[in-house]
Image (cartoon, rainbow, N blue to C red; front, side, top):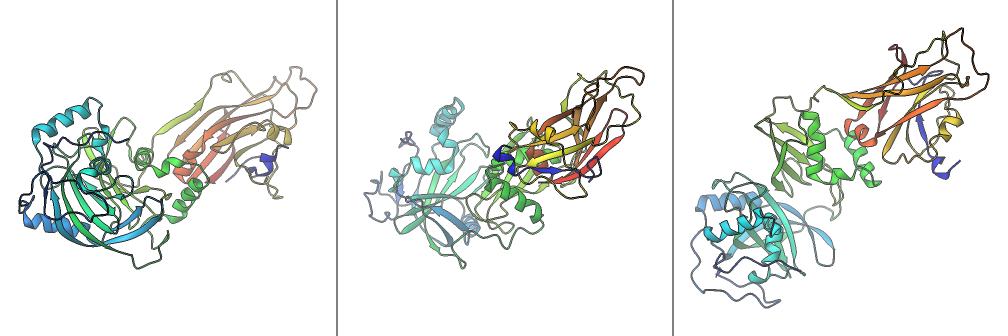
Length: 465
């Protein structure tokens, strides 16, 4: 047998059936930089355009205080130029070192450029800071740049983001806004830079899993994380893909508009990270709150809850979806009083050991051999087979449907009429259909039922991947 079949799990029950280079920076006219204090001279800092007094504030004092409090005590995971990763906590916000007032005419021109498909880096707050690094005395290649938060609907009705820059031994908070409005396709602009003090968190400087996010089913999310660690279901590392895939459980679809409106490196809900995704569905706005259950750069994202939806969060939409269908068996009929001994159904979903329990019937080797060249890494094989019988008899899978956590496999069988001649040979007819593994991993416990053309239950089982 092929070596990869040394690990083949077959879920089956019952005597015969299953049961159970950097882009151009902003034009100088857009950023009239006014300095209070230069950055540490670890490299030549940019020459100030004008040595003038810094405006007293770019927002009202109360709002500035609230903004500072928002990012105080935020934990950040920074990746340095040598790829070293460490955790820091923002303990205080200091003096303002630069202000860059927005010139709306130029901002509008840049927005038009982006809408033409140019300078797309202007849509990413971290990329904006990196592309303007030299202007503010930073080093795009040696410094660290970490997104602390990104949110929409600030008091000025524009998006706001904060980026932590590690420059030699010093740290700075760069504040950005979206001059036009808070939207995924609007440019970002630096408006101020402030000194920041960071400390080491009071815990081991390594990824950890606890305490976790209260209310999550950790038995399930641990399995999802293990799948990603094994190289499967890598979409779980991409928050937008997670929103689109898991959003289907709330009635959303790929036709809806998904927009990230807030990113938090750490939050009271999830200290490993939180992302809020706005969903426009049937002209209504909903918010999906995604969290990181574990620490580390390779940790998965998952949905914590959905707000604003007419569907109760956590309650899947019960609609039937056809995963597979064929009409080549539509005229098949079974005329014999019973199926041959050894007839069965199975689900093969990983390369482990064949089921050997005395309570389980082992799938015939001829059926397994039929899957020798099938890669089950990202698939689950649904199998139906007849016991040793005449080649005049046959079996095929006609349809596979899913409704919530219930998957139904419709099997068709064929035999000659009772008074018709039958070929006297011995075969094990079988058929299989491959289903994407992510369906089972996303849903959790999946109830699988095999039925024949007469709605007779051939077997059922529960799969949990």
